[in-house]
Every structure is written in structure tokens, then in C-alpha cells.
Length: 114
Image 1 (tube, rainbow, N blue to C red):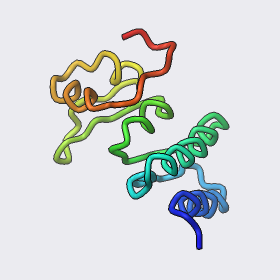
Image 2 (image 1 turned 60 degrees about the vertical axis):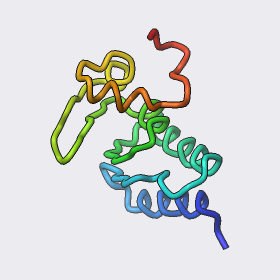
Image 3 (image 1 turned 180 degrees about the vertical axis):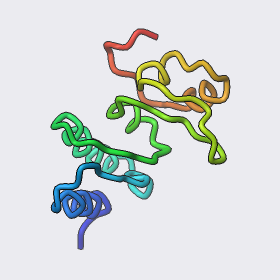
């Protein structure tokens, strides 16, 4: 039997098999414990570094902060704020975005000035 993280990696591999132009991910780490989540994040980070375009819905701020080049913050189907990952996670303009981002428990990349 495969673990949750292994199942997610298999699902990612299956999605990439037909060489899509965009990989769509819906909460790829939502059902995983923190350690397995980090394994899946590592796979997605590698894909991003290789140039794979991804469109991802996630509440996992570690994932979004470490992988996304662009972020769109949605609430109740409305765009609250959008911009570069660095800008949204370090200099969000909207109070609602700032409140949500403040729940981030993992540190930002060392190169980011806060």
C-alpha cells in the first residue's frame, strides 16, 4: 500500500505523462501530514525549477511561498489581491491578505527582506 505522499507523487507523474502545457493541482498537500507534505512540495518545486507551468489551488502557504512566481488571493470567489509571490508574502497591500498571510508558520526564504 502506498503512503499519502507516494500516492500524490504517483498522481503527479500520471498527470505529467501526456506532457501537458499546464499542470493543474487542487490542494496537492491538503490530506498529507507535514513530513509527507514536504516530500510533495519538493517534487513540485523541482517541476517549477524545470519550467513546468502550474496552476494551483492551495491553502498551504509554505507551498505557495516556496514555489509560486505569481499569487492570486481569493476569498468567496473574488480576487482580493494578486502579484508576485514575494510582494504578496512580504508586502501585501490589502488587510485581508495580510491577515491570512500572517498565519504562515514557516520562515520565508532567507533572501527575502521583511
